[in-house]
Image 1 (spheres, helix red, strand yellow):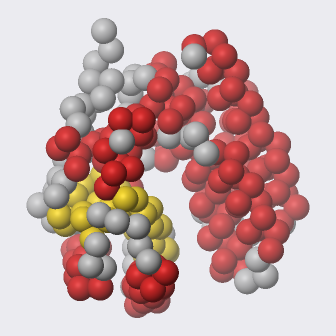
Image 2 (image 1 turned 60 degrees about the horizontal axis):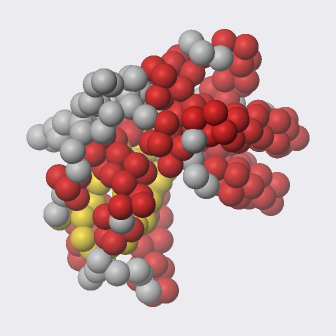
Image 3 (image 1 turned 180 degrees about the vertical axis):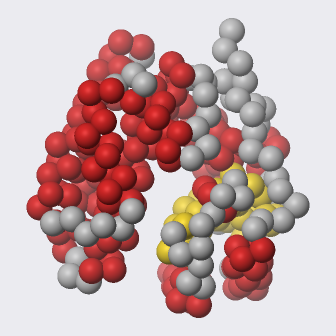
Length: 256
């Protein structure tokens, strides 16, 4: 029987430079979002491994009801304000969920796993307590990428449209991270290990698919902020991104 994965421990505080940012974000969200249920931090900040000027702030915001248009505008304003006032972070990546979506049995392998093993609750009723520890499985890997073709198409369209270098580099970094994490979830059920960094995720993927090392190296080039011609980035999304999608379908036909 596969062993259960450990849940991400809740630190008493984050790194001081990032702890202040999280506190300010929580303060603004509690004051401005009436339907707020709970707030979670993921990524390098949650793991206490964030690097000033290089790390994103990954936030999952759970609300009791969907946000109205005005509340969404307020949320966007808060995110923009935090990004502009806090040079320690590159960007705020916000995932917005409604409570019933998280607790829906159909989403247990996606949002249950996400909150239990990848996040730290910093405000509100911690929904991760509703779930036990998960075991490595194909269902988790598949569920975490159920909308991968849509996401890749969105990145492709936004990259084609952007004319601002900083926005372009941010999009390149985000799509590269998404592709590497997706690669990792292709082998998650085989490795039986929870990757706690994108480097670990890439290493586990390459242990099963060493022939794709060049593609992974190119994705890390984008993550580093190196500016690559737009045509080259679009080719990587179309070529390697499509390979990832196809490989998910291939494994699903074998396992599912």
